[in-house]
Image (tube, rainbow, N blue to C red; front, side, top):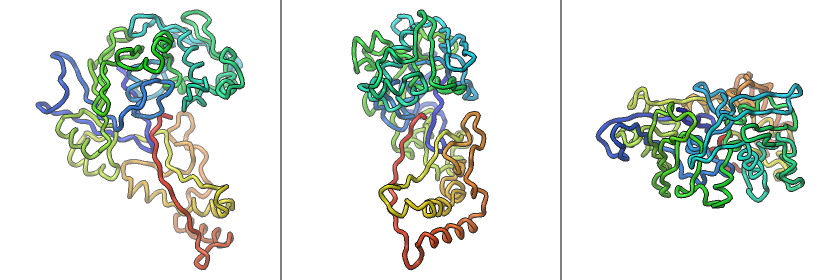
Length: 390
């Protein structure tokens, strides 16, 4: 069974454990059940509208796209039984494996066409519409400058899907794992509108079916017998619980009320490793913390010397190694080193300079720009975190 890969800011952290005879959701005899701490309440289970990692944790179990994750998190075909790429890299033709929606209706190439047009419809207001801009006319459709029929997505027949791109994209299989590229059941969306993801109307094609959604309490899914690879699904039921208090979630894991929680306070990593040995898992993720400077609004920031000095003055090694302490890596580029095919990426030229030397150079740059003890530079920092799947 493929459980969703979670993508969080800088580092995804998980606490895993299980103890018997504690308060937890009932599990039918002979079944395998999972109690999943999922940080926040899902705002949407619509693949074309959801934007949060915690929503994807559920959506990834309810839907399946052309590609999915291997155990190593590399893209492997899912609904794409096979595919062919044209010599110029612009046309990708996918042969779909026969599969059905959870209501028994067949999944067809037209469900992908419907989903992608809906994703790019300005009325849908999808936060991830830009991911489909690499499809021919994707941006024009999203901006209302072209009709949906001009989009480079065609159903050649019920089981053959053709994507025409704006430019070659050898990384397309990795993108196709994202929820934005999942099909949606055109018949259910047309029949129920935005209410199609309610449990009583829900139709999916993933390993699980949506059964209950009690706001602020839990979301329950059960194994989907219509899933194309149902015999490989080893869990019968999952309860997803919103767990905004990560410390309380730790205690619930320790008591066996939760089998896992997908986040904990980074500064508590050593304590958790001591009190719950073997349960803590961390790994680098495709995200970066950074400070965005209001260049047009603050005159000082219009000087590249000031911007460079501020960047050089951030002790990334101290922050990651002494404050965060859970395996986070110092960021010297926007693209995280874990990005597939990217390696270490393009690093700042002064990245390997010892920090005291960087501080001295930063002071020199600020002085050159007219700032120092007699004229200090004063700035205001505002902090916000948003966990998104891409």
